[in-house]
Amino acid sequence: MITPVHIDLYSDTHTKPSAAMRDAMASARVGDEQQNADPTTNKLQEMVAEILGKERALFLPSGTMCNAIAVRAWCEPGDEVICDVTAHIINSETGGPAALSGVMLRPVHGNKGIFTGHNVRAALRPVKRNSPISKLVSLENTCNFGGGTIWPVNSVADVSAAALDAGLKRHLDGARLLNATAESGIKPSLYGEYFDSLWIDLSKGLGCPIGGVLAGNTDFIERALRFKHQFGGAMRQSGIIAAAGIYAIENNIGRLKEDHKNARRLARHLTHIPGIVLDANTVQTNIVFFNVQNTGHTANQIRDNLIKRGVHIGAMGEYTMRAVTHLDITERMVDEAADHLATILS
Image 1 (tube, rainbow, N blue to C red):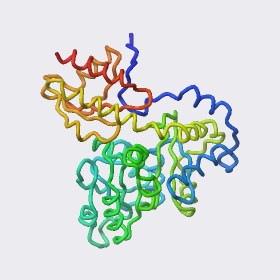
Image 2: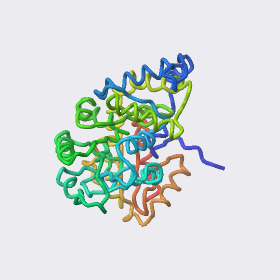
Image 3: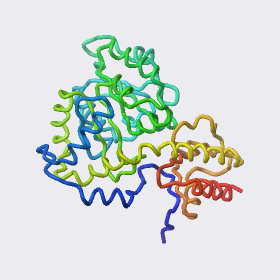
């Protein structure tokens, strides 16, 4: 018998659509999005384009598909993408750049996912007929495996300038960009000024069941539309799911800081549990990484024992765990999860 999980800190992708969001989905006006005839999808795309300060946007099934299309649109087979060693496109997209686009990834070693213009310049290869050609630099904001860290605008500007000097296109994996902007107070469109393409995820902190929205100028989106179809992305009456995105943008962005507050609350609790190692001051948004090696238990053992108590926290390595707060997590749940963890380890 599977123990039901009532405190799900595994990921913000585990959010459930609220009753009000479901109502919006049920009443959505729809049409054939492949023919630009779905009014709800069109409205969502226009909203996101405005938020990100771009000419156009494209609704897609997932953030991974946003990245895949951007890589394909900017690169040719054999080209190279510069990104941090922690990047989602390296670690969590099943080798998609290679499989779908024939593209290589050139990792650099930043600090918690944040690298510099110097890193970009150092990663550029000499121009030789037998060398891969660098075409794109990709950033991730917030940096998931960096611990949910926020890219400072001056760091983005530094990398953007180095990319422009080298003739590279600039892409932003914005899966949790709105977490970054909600916490920092920086407008998403300001980040957008430094990128040729970027996207936001709907299915994480915004609480939608599916979807990401990719943005750029008109020429980029026209090219992206071709690869959307080539990768199997025609969704037809997609307004049913686009309506969830509209609802989320209108209702769920403003509350993202609550998730960050809960993440810091959890981190403070964890610092008082013997054997757990983390620096609570490094928690900037809704992601909390912590090390359990000194507890005498592996991450998998702790995860399994927590699940028996109805709490789900991810095991990300032998001794590394990750907890992610979101709109379905309350202060009480954070306190209860920490209590269960302390009881297991005592």
